[in-house]
Amino acid sequence: MRVIGFHIDNYDDHLYKVASENRLIPESEIKEYCKINKHNIVSWFKIKSSNSDSDIHDNFRKLVSEFIKPDAKLALVLIPDSFHLANNIETLARRMIHIKSIGADIKCTNPDYPDPFQNALKYLSFSNKESFSSSKSGKEIIKKAYRGEVLGKIPYGYKSHNGRLVIDDKESKIVKLIFNLYSESFYGLRVISKLLNQRGHKTKSGRIWTPLTIRSIITNRSYIGTYTRYGIRITSNHEPIISLDLFNNVNSILNSKNTTKKKYYKSTFLLSRKIICEICGNSLTGITRKRTWKLRNNESKSKVYRYYRCEYRFQNVSDQSKFHSLLNADVVEKDVKDIISNWDEDFISNLSPVSSKTYTQEIEQAYSYFANAFQDYAMGKDNISNLENSLKRLDEIRQNKNVYLDKQNHIIYHQIFSNDIQESKTSLNQVVSKILIQNNKINIFPYV
Ligand SMILES: [Zn+2]
Image (cartoon, rainbow, N blue to C red):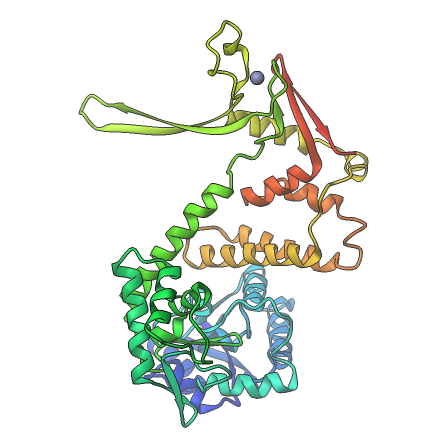
């Protein structure tokens, strides 16, 4: 196969040592890879500076133009790692999608992470902040970060020695205690912070422990030896204090506590409090019912059903109570969305959405949607179109930054059809005041 090599040339040789022990310099690694796989190198793109994206960007543009020339022949593009193609995950996603859209492909020569998307999850990070890395001080800091040197705050449990993180004996014992208390007992963040304060322990800055500081300890990947800073993530950068198993265990306990909370606040019912009971005018609430039944071979099967129900339906056992509304949620949600999808441009322009979100909130939400789509795609859980859509939406919001407050009807309207149920619901709530269903006919009342 024809191969094009693409890599940062003027590289810092600390950069590679921290990435992995047994790696060659980029050019040699690409050559070696081609020798083993019987590939034929036809050209090279060598990026002079590893500090800014503009040089990578220029080379990437030239690479693309090679592929779209009339006499272009296809070739596989080889990079050593994702950070040779972009310095943050969003840029990487855009470049990968671009390359794939013209029928070409990029692979990493890193033997552990050949897929550029997975490689990016390992070596790059999500950063919603714009162009930090291209600023002057940013460049210096990134250089240091590539070497895994200590920048800024040293995590509790470590101290700095010749610019590297080393374990602090006294503090690391407390870190271990926190992780063990959290994983082995039923102690929550508050109790653990109290306990440490009672024993007279102080934080790095000499303050008392709070549930928040405990939380920041148990979620900090530094304790498993990972270094994360300014878009660079290096595993096995320094000696870990906590084993990966314990860290994962503690974080899954923490997350499970978070999700129960979220479930309580977050309803997955798109139309709750919007549909009105046709008998009494009360708003319907979403309920789920799990039905379990036994099969002949004694195995049991179960299915979850979702309904919107008027709370008076079963309360008074009178002749009337059975007439209060009970609706199949899946069916009514689909029907409502179908009707809304037929609203025309004029109608949408005349809407007056309530409690609109700010630009920053929109960007943050769209970015987290992108981050999820990227991870799902990298893990093979999803197709690339979701990832593309998430980037399109980011663009849409960024482009509308200035006119955001005047012209957001269409943005809100389109978000009703989002795959993210929470976003869909928020947008629908901004636009629809109530829904009345009589004799199977749905009437939607928008805010106008
Ligand atoms: Zn009712």
